[in-house]
Image (cartoon, rainbow, N blue to C red; front, top):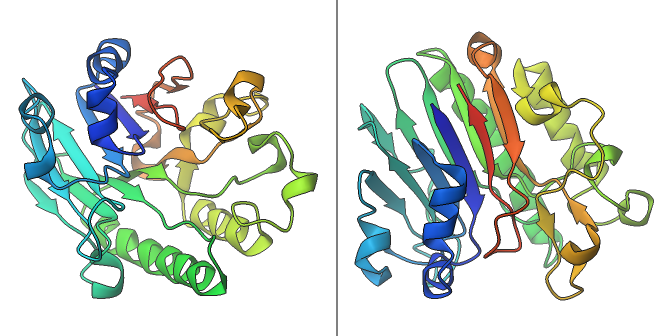
Length: 254
């Protein structure tokens, strides 16, 4: 089973620019999860909303249109689907979708960006804390896999310019400390587990500076698996050759 996660930075744009079919052909997912869809289902083309062979589920922002949003597409029908954590402050932005399968919970998450002022950084950190509590409750039922745009690079190896970004959101000590906490709680960073010393492995590049051409990037996109299921992760991959967004898809194979 291959599970793919991609921050599409606008699902309608991906479809309009003919990146949708190449994405599916390149990654060949059994399940895929999208972040930053920036669209509600009725705004999407039929071939995207009802992707052949997949059941599709969407959580859209209630705060404003064209913002945030996540989606889950699955060849295997989930046993149940959750839309958020049950906390209005976070759920109204359409940032979490969770599918329950026989052997695990699978969550696709668009974590908040800490930019645009101290208020949003504090919001991001509150979201982080609430999310870890939420998945720990789900984990009491069955193992947990979560993926998506975490909006933080964990270690210096996870971005091209660590020294220059020590005081910038996305690499602040308090943001990185939460990822330490996730790992202490018993979750495995699947890519780093498979490639502990791999450098230049990024999933996000700034579009304005054409940073992707020079691979001046950040590893913002992750798959984490709880210890109980981590041994079933056979491979982890960053699909840096897939275009259409400022993020590349990432995947795992069970």
